[in-house]
Image 1: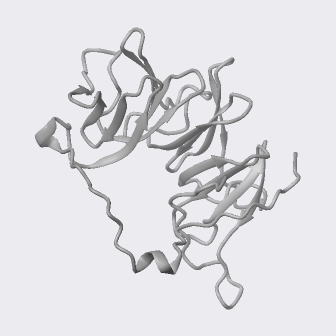
Image 2: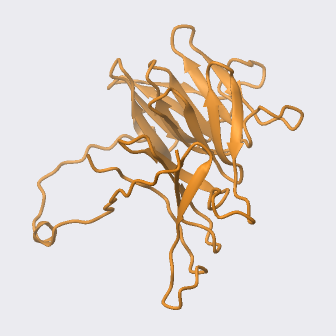
Length: 239
């Protein structure tokens, strides 16, 4: 459980000979003129049926290649999406779409009934999600969901118990999450979970671990101090 596997992540490296070549790629634009609900797209996903989903700052968009269907919050409908500002999208092994929002917690979309299930933070419920600003999400090899919450650390959701457990930073322990502002999560081939945080304080960086034990990877400056700002926004696992 506590064994640490070293994995090499190479981010943003492009061979120099490609930089001097002009790539003959054409871009077609899809904007509000074609029916997109808003021009800032934070997340894109393709479902099992081939539909594209775009998460914007004003609604969730389902696109069939010709037309958009837009999902927005309806205050009078508890089965509507909880918030219009979409921050992340995730397709799980069952084909369900999970939607993280900026203010409204987490949503799961039921395509058969065309409705959303909402997961809010509630101060009176200790097994509710830890916060309503959801930044990222994955499902691991065991079917457990890992959800990143800005300011709320990492949440593990077990669909069998339908409860959330929290993994947060503890300033008195070096074996906890590096910071509670979580920006990205991936799982490597060994089942190890990598968590990137984004804050700029001295304990930001990457936390690696399984279960509740974490190994920290933080940026050191030339004086071996760890107060250099570290912003981990995305991680890529090379296959």
